[in-house]
Amino acid sequence: MKNALASGIIIGILSGLWLFIMRWAGYTTFNDQVAPIEYVSIIIPVLGLFLGLKSYRDHDLGGKMGFLEGLIQSFKILLVGGAIAAFGGFIYVNYVEVEHNTRDFSGRLFGALLIGVLSSLAATLLLMNKSNHSVD
Image 1 (tube, helix red, strand yellow):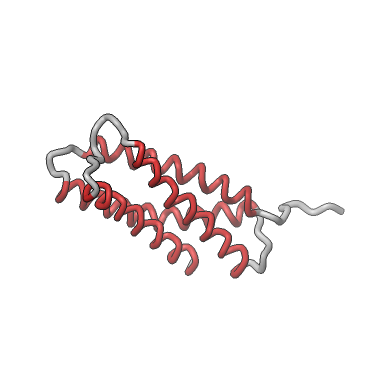
Image 2 (cartoon, rainbow, N blue to C red):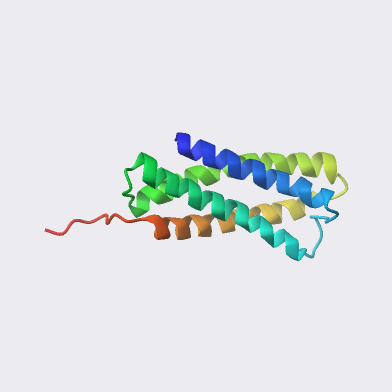
């Protein structure tokens, strides 16, 4: 669980800060159109999840990880990171972009959830190296 907390905290803080960095750079993050630079934010959870899962496999599991082990660990990482990023997003919506409603933010949050689930499946499939069945 220590690995999930560390990786999740890093992902959550970086994702939450991304909103404020975009605002500081002059991009409004709440409108019907998405600026192309916003797609760079996808790198944060994808890379963070991959590196966190790789660290879990190499250090905690002795280099052998099955699909289910990896999937559970990646969901733990995403749960921690998502909670922190959502908290940062709510602060952003309530104190920085007060004139916008939460509909736009909830749409982005759902998109992040979808990216997280797909990333966890992909990272787990890339990093698993142990079969869950035995051959007699």
